[in-house]
Figure 1 (cartoon, helix red, strand yellow):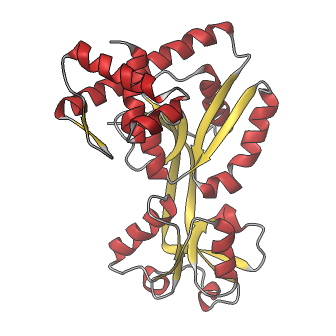
Figure 2 (cartoon, rainbow, N blue to C red; figure 1 turned 30 degrees about the vertical axis):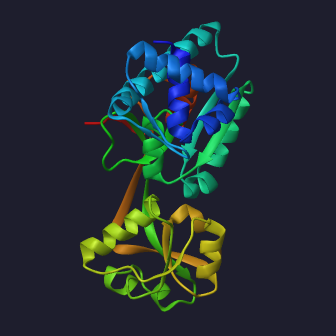
Length: 298
């Protein structure tokens, strides 16, 4: 099979159409149609149901899809490894980071890494920890930060941070007078929460579920400055890592009566090729977190 035809096939699937696929590939639409037609002829199978305004994979197309993703990914890994035999003189680190860590933990690490490797390009994507798992598995991103509770079988991970999730509120809030906050008191309050898929939201939902309470969601947003402003104006309370409010004199963090710990890992595809640039970043991060440990998905 022609690897280019497989790339075109994946683009048609991902973009849900021949025209959109051609646009993403920066080629003419007839070239995409011809490549798919030749692929179907070589396989003697129909891969798409072609309708007037839409397309849909046939059963045979679905079967090919999983193989095509693996073949294209393996080819890209091989091409990258061959290019990197020339040395770590250029390259790109593509990393996905949850917004809380991207704003308050990673900036000095990223700047120090850039200082050590000035020829490498850093591309940072913000997303939720669960979405990041999917992005790594599908090859959309090379490395990313995930929650260490249940590492997927296809990822290798290295735990680099263990921190406590705390109840965060205005300094003159009644709960701020206590040394710790019970789930019963916490879940009586209006809350500002991240959207689904973020470890912040999952931690709150897990704590509520284990304690037998429901979330009283007043606001839902992934914007950390907005979350802090909502708490600062007394409209709600929230949970955050302590590092997030260290410089906010008007906000306080109180541990839960039963401490809520969060373990975060840097992860990459276990069976994929980790480029020298990305390996350099992983090693750099590990060097800055000497107590971290490497684990494998099961």
